Image (cartoon, rainbow, N blue to C red; front, side, top):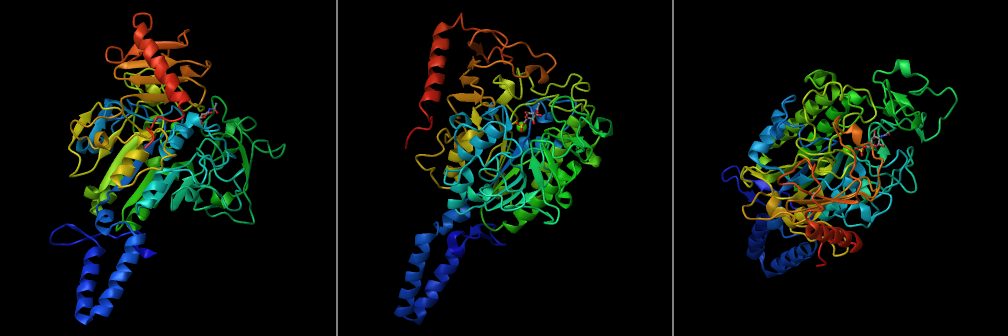
Length: 549
Ligand code: NG6
Ligand code: CA
C-alpha cells in the first residue's frame, strides 16, 4: 500500500509543501473530460485510498523528528550550559537557534530505564526487569506495547533507531547467529543499526535489522557470562596488555585492547573498533535521512558518547584538558554538527524538529582508569546540581535538553519542566495521533512547552527514578522530595565531593534557593513534606499518571 505514506514535494517557486493531493485533483479533472464512468471509478479509487491513507495534506505537514540522545552527558558538560574546559560549538548553535531548557530531564539516572520510558511513555519502575540490561538480556519492550515509534509509524513516519540500544534483543535471549527477534523492528521501528547493549559490555558488533552485520557463519559469535575456556584472555589475566586499564568490573573478555563486562568469542569479521563508532552512527544516519527525505521521518540517534569505555576517534583525542571524557564530548558535538549539516544540505531544517538530551547524568570513574577524575580540574559535569548517574538527586536526571525547529521555534531559554517520558504523547500530538488509552501511562503532552510557545506549560510534577532500587525524586515547582529506599549506590564515583546520603527516608529541598540539595527542609516544612510524600506514593500506586482519556 504505497499511499500509506504521502511523499512531500516542494515547488521551486513557492517553497510550499505539496502532496499527491494535487495529482489526484488533476486526475479527477481529466476523468471528467473522459466521461462520468471514469470519474466514478477514480472517485471510488480515491475513497479506497482515503480509507487507508492519512489525509495527504496533513501527512505532508508533519515535521520530521530527530531525537539525539547522549549517553551519560551531564548538565554542565556543554559550553552552552556553562562548561569552560570543553567547547561544543555545534550544540551551542542548536541552542541559540532553539529552546535551551534549564529544567529538562530524563526519567531515570541509568540508561536502560530512561530508554524504556522514552520509547514506551511509561515509567520503567512500573515494569520489572527494566534495570541496566546485561549482554544476553531479552527484549524488554514486548511487541504489542504502544511505543513512540509505533505511534509515529501509524502517522505515516519512516522510523529508525541508530546507535546504542541497550533494551535487550530476542526472547528469552538473543540468538546472535540467527534472527534477533523481537527487537526494534517489532516495536515500531522500520530500520535499525545498533550497538546491541553498551560498549563496555560484549559483544562489539553492529546489529542491522535482525542480524549481526558482517557475521561469517564459519566463525559464529558466542556470548556468555562464564569464561569459555581456561586460556581465554581477560582483563585479569592479561591486564598488562590493555590500552585502557579497568578500575572496577570490566575485566572479562578483551577486544581492541579493552576488557569488558561479559565474555565472547568468534564473530571476528563483525567486530568494530571503539574509535569508529561515532563515524558509523553519523554515516548511517546521513544515508537514512537522505533515503527518507521525501516523507516524514523519525530518527532516534542514540549516541554512545560519553559512556565508558571513552575512546573517541583518533582525530578527537587530546582535544581538551579533560582526557578521554572531554574527547568524547567533542566527538558528540561533531556528530550533532554533521546531522545538522545533512538537514541543511537537504533543505530539511525547517521541516525537522531536533531534540537533544541525555539518558542520565554524569559519572566520572565508571569502571576504567581514563583520567576522568584526575583531569577534572574545576569542570563541573553536573553543573550546580548534586549527584549524577545512579542517583535521584537533580544531577542524576536534569540534563542538557534542547529543541530546535527552524522557522517554527523562536529562540529562547525555558525553565518549563519537560522530560523524555513525554516524547510519546507530545510527538503523537505533533503528528496528529493519540496514544492508545492503555499505553504511554506516564507520558504527558507538553508539546507547547517543547516548542517554546509563550505561556505553554510543561509538567506540574516530575518523578525521578534510579536504576530501579526504589529510590525516587519528586519535583513539584521549586520543591524536591527525595525518597531513599535503598543505600549503597556508588555515589562517590559521581564527583569527588559527593556527600553521604541523608539518614531519613524522606528529605525535602527547595531548588529555587538550593539547587545543590544541601539543606533538608522537612522539619521546617512538614506540610509540604506530607503533600509531596502522598503525591509520590499515589504516583507509584496508581499505576499510571497520564489521565485516562
Ligand atoms: C554498571 C557498570 C557501569 C555501566 C553501567 C551502565 C560496573 C561496576 N558498572 O553496572 O560501568 O556500564 O552499568 O551504564 O560494571 S548505562 O549508562 O548504560 O546505564
Ligand atoms: Ca547512560
